Image (cartoon, rainbow, N blue to C red; front, side, top):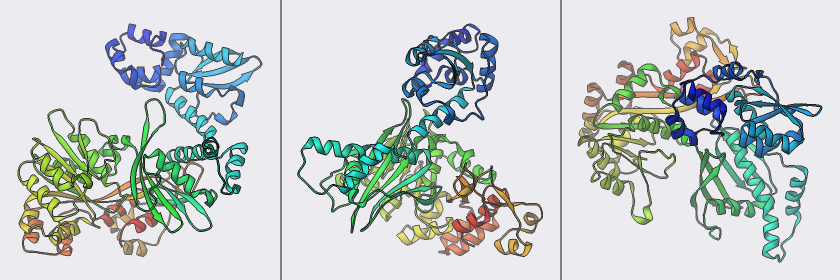
Length: 558
């Protein structure tokens, strides 16, 4: 970013942005245009139009521009990333450059020097420019290896065991490093949540979990199983000699100057080698905000009211990968104010959140959930988050904390909100403690969101819709949609939407708990109180056209 840009100076002179703000925030943004837009609260399109008026440069709409058309000899990755510019087309000795800052003359001179061509500048929307740059460079760095790289990689398979010098080893490992890096980048681009590296007797496969479904993406030679696992273990700082025990580690992958993504790595010895599963941990997911997660208005109000209480316990339940951590962290992000002391105990710490004291559970050092909680209560806490309630000891301390003026957030592995209460009672927590300390239980699932570009209306008989659980009023005025599939999505779905059961512990539910009632009774009273269960919440999402009925049937019970 050019801090001495005439464009930036012009906006400071005009009083549209504050010089002190610019000085404080300059490291946070990739381009001058982004800095002006965010600090001056100017829309990206408006900013481009103002550039046209101020500097008399033509405007170009990048929306329908295909970066694949750019001549290969114009793709100077280093210059494109550094200066945030994009070469569009070459006409004779002239190259047309798209820039969000038309006054970054140093960048244009560098490009002219590098190519030997003269530059003509067109101003563009910086968001569109960001997307097209990423698209261009993503295509250049996709999972498809070049012919030479692939040949080098394939040759490794045919090599038998032989004595090699360390130098030879390094040479052999180079394609492995390239390949793993491309796999990781490809997973991030495709929006995967998990990567599975699986060795078998006659093959090796790599799968990505995209929107909750596993897809096979690559089949490297199975003789490279040990090299692939060794490389991943080196990256995650694990013991490469230990192949008999499971291990856990982390990888921090730097994507750009300002963005990095963490991977949680887990190894497991299997019959034919080590299976490795990597979970992608993106800290930005905690910053999404509660409105993005998919809560209904009444459910959102219940959650916000519970977060506003000075004490009590909020429990989030659901299977692995159902978005519990993101829900909890969204709540913590709302609570994260200078006047609150927030401490969390997690295994492992998945999302880094500034302003929150995060503790990694380490059983070897006797740092268990229970011990961490005891320590928290001596640290003047306001809000405590426990990664998971796994045993009676952790449950009891959490409940005591909730009863003594602290807000406690935690997770539990159960199928529904009413079953959570039964689980706590089965653990051995007294019924009066459960009834008095818990204020809210959220059960959740993640359903795949229909692609807005290709979803198609679906017609089903009214009898079938009624059997599925839709009300008469819903059947009358709703349109269901089914997946179709296009180039912008995976099998007709793109992204995911949360389905929630938010149950407040009302006096009636507390009475049932006290007299030892079962989860079916609690579920019935909960429905009467107006708290939709997972099935009804899912059907509402299908009726709103966000997901398909087939997807709701996949993630919820009939």
